[in-house]
Length: 433
Image 1 (cartoon, rainbow, N blue to C red):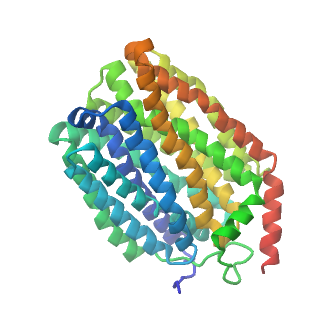
Image 2 (image 1 turned 180 degrees about the vertical axis):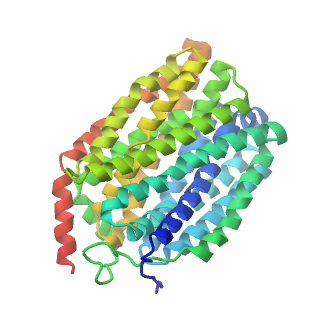
Image 3 (image 1 turned 45 degrees about the vertical axis):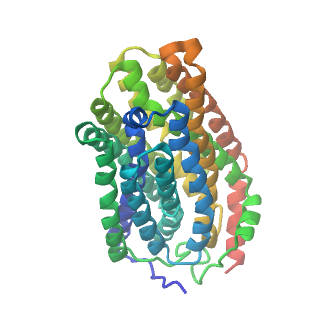
């Protein structure tokens, strides 16, 4: 049996836990993005193609990530989530460090698959814990704060990874990034407590029912909004992962920047702008949703549409200074979607389904976004090499950006059923009291 503690009444402690879980997520993305900034020296050292890079940073990683995520989430809905997060952090950090020992593509692929297995156990349990530490009225803000870990991780992964690789070699970059995560896992075990499930929900007076995977899937089938927002998030991630994973290569090949320059520029812009947009998305949605819950999806829709103009200029413009400047609004606006969508996902299901619901959301998001985004860019880049020459990667990334309009469409479809699905979930939770 899991020993669950009541949520501490101290706001300070709640935020301490949130900051610590956000740092776990930061390690998640440092370990994931370190390969992105290192792919040019790795490509040269191991003799890889763009398609192989896309497979390495995208589809192969995503496949094991989403496959492992479902059973780990099932366990997280039943067992101590804090322990699962700590163990997962230690394992993926170990596999990151081991990436520095590889001698060929096959070995690197195996090491990155190990990172994917570990990272699959980080986010769904953390999402579930946060929803038990924060009430629905501030859940979007809390989950958006947690999601800032993506961009803080990108900042340090790009900036530190590029500098370490250029000065000490790409293998040492994996060692320096991986080892601290193992140590931090012990801090998580020491400080973070397992909260009571459903503390802020109608079932909070008693333990919420633990749902089987089939019961969770049956519940989600009654929530069409969940599937619309999952696919909408997936196509948003398709663009961000696809183009984001090749942005260092684009800036180096098409604009002549060095590895260190790219690391600093992308680290600061993607990290700070992305973190700002991610937090603002949840914060604004929580405030505006007091009038209409559909703002949880309208915010991502408006952000996705508004991001397109600066994003196209980033890829098709010629002036390096201007395209770097255009990345700032593009990153802020395109990052608005994640926090509100995760909060909506949790508001659509019972507390005993939340880790599994997050895992299914991330299954769809990562299989399409992380799995197909970088792979599609890599394949198109190789295919465009003959007709477009040195601009092959530029037009491959522009093609993937255009596909991002599908994300806006599916999120808009979700607004049509959101209020009805939320009301049905409230009735079901009340009936369980």
